[in-house]
Length: 364
Ligand code: PMP
Image 1 (cartoon, rainbow, N blue to C red):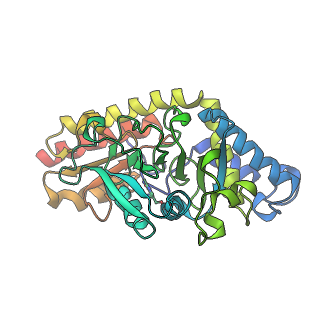
Image 2 (image 1 turned 90 degrees about the horizontal axis):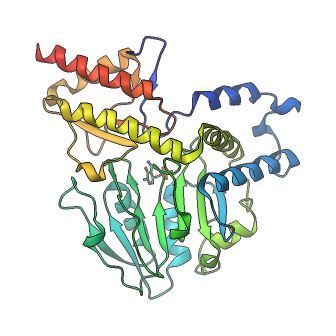
């Protein structure tokens, strides 16, 4: 099925599309939540109704990811970028060195910010060959590091880790902004996981942090209160007004995921969708993706055109047909299709059909 004027497939990398069922549910409750006569976004965050939504959101996320009881779940503001600062401020003690793995644009942002607060050692990098990820054999983790940070999925570069780094007793910290909830996860391997919501969780403005208890309480004196994990945990995400509507929508997404069959089911669907798209790109003479197959992102598929001069025409035709937001990141150019949990298989099939059609018309 090629998208008709009425059918739109939104491939935006974030803020990304949300499941249609969730959007309709939110629409039904938008003005009048459960007959209370007000919207969720119009009520006190300390009201029993909102507190119950917050508790459900935490409970559902715990169920989805099997989060053990010695981890706190925080619903925060500030985006994933605020965590770039919070992590060193909370976890790097004076005189210590923080370890980072560099796999692309977002790792580098995290590294640049951490350098403002701590010494950083980049223990592995793919900077000299962006077609590759970083293999487990490429690095070893010095046990004196304050923590080890990596970016599980590089949203812009389309590179995804094929392993969870093994780092002994060094706390492992992961930016999962663009892959959280796309597959099952062993949370116990991590000290802290964080993610901006606007890809696989809900609307922008919400950030989820999952942090192990024993990492609380080490923030440096000058850490802003709202970046101090202990303060945030003690106040159950309510050290100030939380992003209440975002938390409400995230809870709908969590419930939707549970109803879909949970993360094992999402993993199967995501693998299938990614395979369909990569296969079509690899079979094409006009489009290509240069990332090594073993580390290709399941969520963000960057691709390029052999003939750059066709890019604008391609984007225009795509948009006319309802394939939205296929333009690559401004720093990388080319094209990118983000296919998070909410993207239906039909969207990917329709895109593949369009790629083939465009290529055929170009070749003629
Ligand atoms: N990390 C990753 C992997 C991302 O994809 C993004 C946003 N695209 C960020 C961090 C930054 O997130 P935010 O804009 O929420 O600060």
